[in-house]
Image (tube, rainbow, N blue to C red; front, top):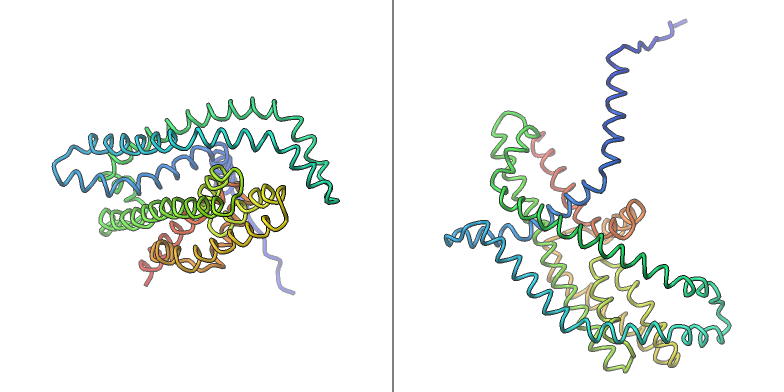
Length: 324
């Protein structure tokens, strides 16, 4: 009979297992910091090429970054100044009419009693929303600071990654890797902004044409959820149909047709033109990535699923080239 093989557990293996477990626990505890850094890399990838162009025209890198910050905040402030008043007004009316809308839907033999507890807890939710908004402002400010210093240190980032690329031409390979990541993620961000604006405008003019109430917040939601590829339009469609259903089933059907047409135009015409060369992922990979991202980290995971896949694709291709 063959001898039974014995497995020796040495002190080194015990120490290694303990240190590796501590390392995994440490990564879990700082997962939010890692997520923030990844988002900072995405924004750095979008802004750094623009800053490089100004730097070539003898504009100091720090000043160029601040100019783009001022430009972005100016555009955001102008957009909010034009959007917030009608958004607040129509959203307030929408929330005020929500009980009546639910009563009207309940008369159609739909059991919507589950919303009663949700409506009763609105004050507590409002307080949580205010606290969450303040925390988000602090996070955004921190993110801006991190992105600023990343852009300032962009030319030196390759020095922090050389240990990942061996000893032969490590710095050059690290720079090429960063260039590919910057190109992919930066193009994805700029493409997503274009898609969000286009879908938001198409939804707004379509809802206005159909005479659907609360067109501004509904169109804003449609543009905002566009960042979640394929799934976003479905999320934005639900409240629009509920609002239209309160007026008439025919209007609700028209709204469904509107969002369906917008999604088809987006998927078959707009996205291929704007994103196909940037993302280059098949619909199956996109949907699976979104599901995994949503399962792991909720909405934030779904939003970051595609850029994560893009970075992993670059890493895998780089490893394959080195072994080839």
